[in-house]
Amino acid sequence: MTIPNPAGHSQPRLQRDNDRVTSVVFSSVNFIISVESNLYIAINDLTCSVSSHDSSLLFTMTASEQLLAALQGIDSGSYSNEAERVQARDALFNALRKVQSPWDIAWDHNWVNTAVNAAIKTLIDAGVFTKWAEAGGEPITCTELAKLTGGDTILIRRMMRCIGGQNLVIETAEDTYARTPWAKTLAEDKSFPSMYGGFYHELNSPMFRTLPFFLKETGYKNPTDVNDCNFQYWRGKDANMFQYCGTNPLLTDDFNNTMECHSKYNLTPWPVVYPTDALVAGAKPGRALVVDVGGGKGHDLKKFLARHPDAPMGSLVLQDLPDILKNVESGDNAAITIQPHDFFTPEPVKGARAYFMHNVLHDWPDATAKRIIENIAGAMEKGYSKLLVHESLVTDVKPLSRVTVSDITMMACLAAAERSESQWRDLMASAGLRVVKVWRPVQSVESIIEAELA
Ligand SMILES: C[S@@+](CC[C@H](N)C(=O)[O-])C[C@H]1O[C@@H](n2cnc3c(N)ncnc32)[C@H](O)[C@@H]1O
Image (cartoon, rainbow, N blue to C red):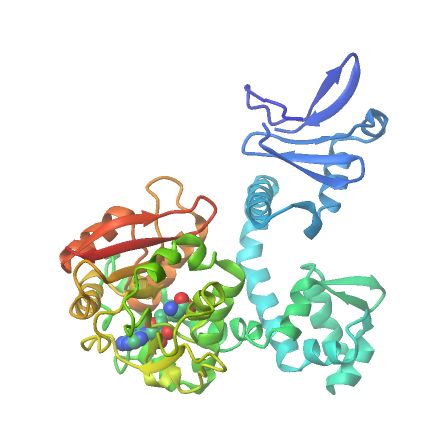
């Protein structure tokens, strides 16, 4: 099925087998998605092709009709695992960029993203997604949605048309919409709307608005001072981003919920990336097994517990700032202890098997991150305790876009940055630790840096 394209053609060209057309190559192929019973799309960096066992199907369709048919057939059943889905998504994104005009791209950035986010938040706040689910979740008219929510039909219709245009809900008949997985998740997962709520509207959106002006005013220098960066340029010098989040009631829970969503939907569980069995096997009785430093709602400890349900009572310690932990409950998990702790003070849990930090150190510039690591190092037992840092590494060539977007986010909120492997090694060494191994699963965005006292 793979159709090489050494010449790098970008024009459609026919593939023939005994004078029968078997496929149409648009531009080289490294994977194939079956999109309909007899139609396949194959995509990689160089080629996008559509092919069929039934060549008559290809004879009767123009090249662009075949591509459109194949693309329309793609759905969540088109790939057999998450890695394949991500590969398909990225290939389709690359293909989209090739067909978009410069104006299309600018329109997306400056009109689509802004208008759609406003429409989504309005519909969430008006209760559209939850009331729709409570009413059964079947295809529904805007008039019915307006009745359910008490909103104005005309307004609801305009908002629904806007998100319908983005395929976030599907128009099945005039004025009638069906839910997509995204729309269902907004109703079924209480944490999911937080990404559009306090997180985007109270934090990300205003914070990114000021970044270019801050950088202009500071002469385009790379920011490295957490107490004097874009965040203070936007909000004043009273607080850094985390202090602000802890005191803004619109944001505290939404920040935590957003981190939970990243963890739930977006990231490979850390016990899959790192061999946690070895931690458990070498653990000394009566000691803490894992201390999750800056652990937010404790989702990473719950992932550990899912893999090791026999973790002893109280052996998993969740630490974060008191304001962040005030609404967090350990639930029925007797293994988890909640302990308010500021990591700029000495680590109180001594000689734990592992100190774990997930997306914590990327929040802080080097000098500050070094202080945090030193506070943990002071509690580690040489030859026994591990520091496990779960982060996305910036590769030297073609870093993942998810990581480079996160890098600019860290810059905007805390004058911080995502790091390369060598930068992590230097940082650990500066705090008296040595990197034992970097665990980098091929399909995971994030790696785990395993370090011990040097
Ligand atoms: C980006 S979040 C990551 C949360 C969690 N580890 C995860 O991966 O979802 C960073 C966490 O560090 C916490 N944090 C910030 N400053 C802190 C401090 N001084 N002491 C303890 N935790 C802090 C924040 O409250 C937040 O929960």
